Amino acid sequence: MANMSDGTVTQIDRGSGRVVATITVADPKLLRAQGCAPDSVHAYYSGSWGWRACDTPYAIAWGDSSVWALDDGARQLVQLDPGAHAVARRIPLPGTGWGVAVLGTTAYVSGFAANHELYEVDLQSGNVKTLTNLDTGPAALAADSTGVWVACVRAGAGYLDHIDPGSGEVAGRYPIDWWSTAVVADQGAVYVRGTFGGDISKVDATTGAMAWSEPGPGFIGRQGIDELGPAADGIWMSGPTTARVDLATGGIVETIRTPSMSVASDSREVWLIELNGSVAKFALK
Image (cartoon, rainbow, N blue to C red; front, side):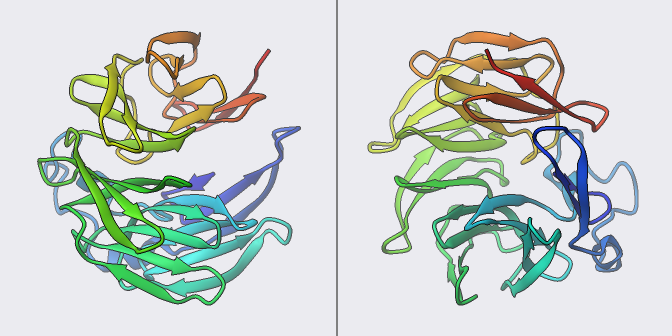
């Protein structure tokens, strides 16, 4: 779990819920020294993407047997060894990042300050390639066998860019709403939070066509933190209540009456970040 105000990642034992380690990955003072904080509390409107400018680590992801965290102050992708409970390596990035997703031995980082860039990081060699023709404002992203999906939504308009991992080029660009805060790819489809009036929308990964857009539990949280949790029988969504939507119809089929800011899931359990910052686990029957 990323502790974005103090530059650490907390490792929690899944069985007991006990904190195993808290690992320092970034220095929040570095971003503040670079001017991330506004001069006034009125500098950003409610819901502005700018509220997250001082967050560090900005995002985390699991892949290639490690946790990967974004240190935007140092412009690095940081590898955490879960066995040693320590930082294993730091890979320099060309710029700051918004989101990170891992596919095999490659990490993809959406550019933050660079408004059209995606960084492709070879996790074995540490080499980085930069894709420069994304639509404006890349933010949340996801990666699976269908490709890399980037929500480009930080500029008052929105597109879902599809990147072909083989060529490293944009293979498709599909309209979504600018208020699209999270993306997951699962079972041959892409699910986008907050687009075209629905709280969640399903996009066909082959054609880019929208299969459905449906209401969800509503939005609580900050952009890029309000995650979707894919499971075999649906997509879990955080909100005033935590809800699972059906993959075929988008309708809500199960709820947990606990408000949450973020959610993760697998076939056996659902993990929530509650509004007070604590972590809760629910076992599925």
